[in-house]
Amino acid sequence: MKTHLALLRGINVSGHNMIKMDVLKSLLENAGFQNVRTYIQSGNVFVDSEEEHGASVGFKIKQEIFKELGLEVPVVVIGKEDLEACFKNNSYLKEKECDTKKLYVAFISKELSSGALNDLKISQFKPDEAAIDKSRIYIKYAVGAGKTRLDQKYIEKKLNVVATIRNWNTVTTLLEMFE
Image (cartoon, rainbow, N blue to C red; front, side):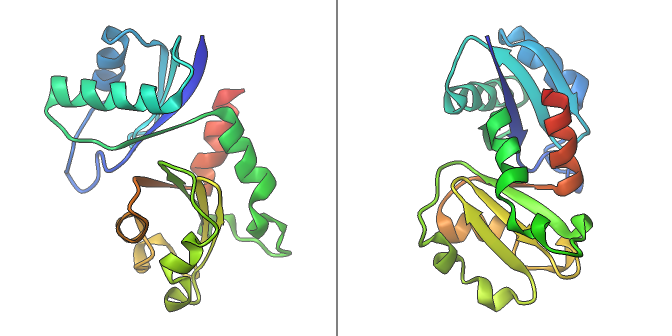
């Protein structure tokens, strides 16, 4: 049995794709997942499964949500090692006066090439910054996530991927929940 963290994109935002966490929990338990736990209303769901591959788990979750609720919800599934890598590889954490309230992580549906940062044309978003680490993009917003065009929709369009972004506080809590 392996624990997976499913990150659902775009649920319970501005009245769109509304899914109550207790409904999601029941739906996933009925689909055969075990030890289903959710964190906050933005679609962070831990599931235990015999399936080893995160992509297969994500596909099944996406199918179940569509079948039961009629909603098309992209899902990125990560493991504990992905969250641990966020702490180990995020160069912004090494800055002397790092403001973690401005740090975010975009979790991407596939591993990105080294040229992906060029594809994003990050320089046009200055003073916002970003760094790529395999299937993660670390983002440091100068003002905040609500005042930038460097968002999930832009990342998905430029890189042709599924992306979902979590703030640093959520990333920290999710790793604690894996423990």
